Length: 291
Image (cartoon, rainbow, N blue to C red; front, side, top):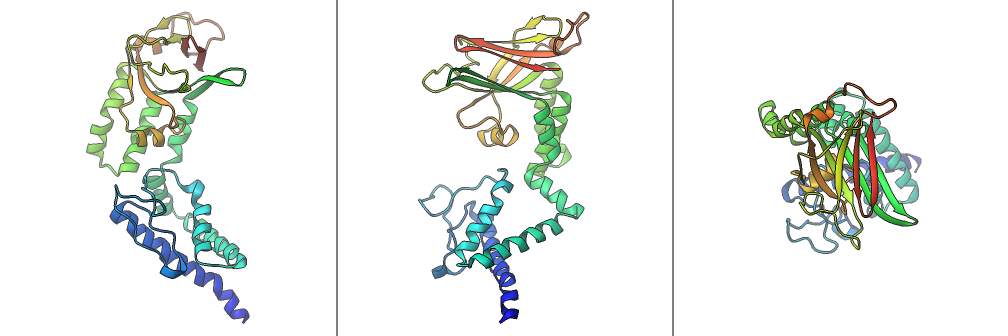
């Protein structure tokens, strides 16, 4: 009896592994997550092809979406669907956690993790070059401005990240990121995400008649107008992946300023940051600073 109890978690792990392997095949073949496995169907049901997702049948998968935060909850739901007791559930999760730690110790596992989930270095570089400012009127949110300075270090990290995610060879990688690198060498560029409540409207930085004013201010307090403001060339899924702060209700822009805006001034003002991105309009004013 005791021997059977000891083997139970491993048996459940094996059933869970079979279920997850089945789902992985479904995702690769049809791009959907199949039904939750239930007792009547043993280890799962067929998924639906893309474009015919029905309620309860699964969900379309974005392969670049960071899912590690939801992994434990996903595994717990799968284990519960196998009708495991509370003891077996906890024991199985513990076994899987130990297996994941052991597997992650090798350099090959780390490389695979970086290729699928993205390299942690990209996140660090993006975080260090991103600023956010929220403008409120009491409890009322006027707007939220976030911007990432697309510096040389960021472009290098982005190139590596993009090629890791899409498994690009060096030649194709250079073609894909040449736009980003070339523009950042010609201009001082920013990725800007702006949230304006729907009832206020006016999230239209790229339009000639916009009520917003966007300026870049150098350390000597000389300000520069944008060379251009345009909607981001990235697809919405890519915006969410590369700039996680740009949520659903934000609008994403690429903004460029003349190259001299980023050059060190002859007589900088004491205590002034290297660059300030200033957005002002009837809803308020926000200043983002990089030192």
